[in-house]
Amino acid sequence: MPVATSDIVYYVQKSFPAMQGTKQGGQISPKLYLAFIDGLIKELEETGQGLCMYVINVSSSTFADDMTMIAFYKYAMDRMLDI
Picture 1 (cartoon, rainbow, N blue to C red):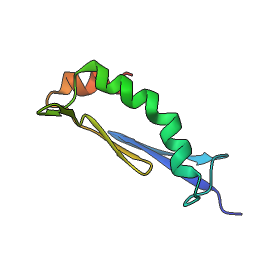
Picture 2 (picture 1 turned 90 degrees about the vertical axis):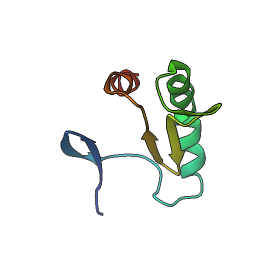
Picture 3 (picture 1 turned 120 degrees about the vertical axis):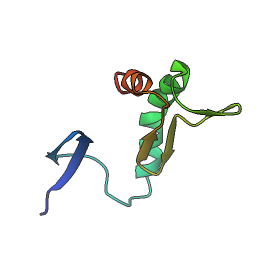
Picture 4 (picture 1 turned 60 degrees about the vertical axis):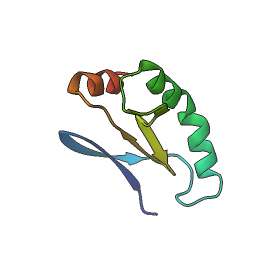
């Protein structure tokens, strides 16, 4: 059975085996991800450090199981990454 891996990219890339989780492309995967990540998204928005367009906070946009964090300044991004 092939072993899935995950990549963490922040200056240095490291891979590690994923020993458990939901099936890639499974119907329940996006719902479980959103339930898991919802608290983090709210916390990132509450910092006020990310990008806002008018009254819409787009500091941590998510799609499927991907998240992009956007900030104007390095210290703001560092604060978001520390959460």
